[in-house]
Image 1 (spheres, rainbow, N blue to C red):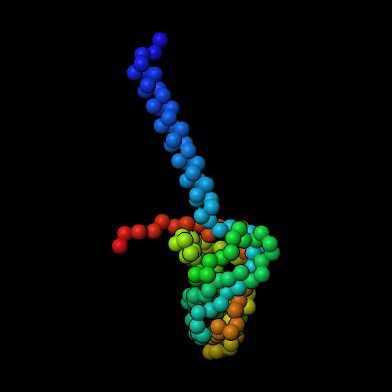
Image 2: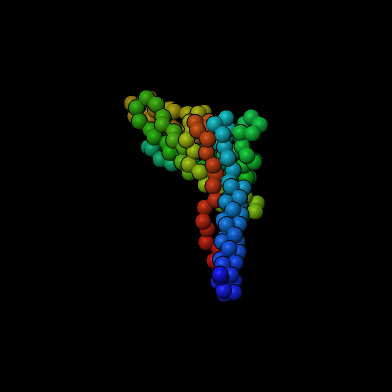
Length: 164
């Protein structure tokens, strides 16, 4: 037979465990709703921030936005405040474009990040220079590129420092 203290302790532990489980479930629900999912069908337009001419490999910054993805390809609209890096590799006959980190800030101050597995097309144009077929790469704000997802991805929340 349990003593009153044993019954009280057992009830307290049970209540504490159920509160912790409820809190963990709430955190999982919150973190899932805090992400933006992009399916393989998602297509983004990449608008350069400025006109540039690259004569060597480097990184450029673009502003991604939905380019008419099919219904459901994005779990919610991309925030208006997004930037993405694109690694440009010059050399030889072709240009190499690799998607870098995409960072978005939502209206409710969520900071979301993703490094998409994607291909990039139409961003800039190669020009011959120094004997190479693609010795210069010209990027123009008037010539946006397209990012096509190769696999699904999620813009997920990143920890931030709220201290001022």
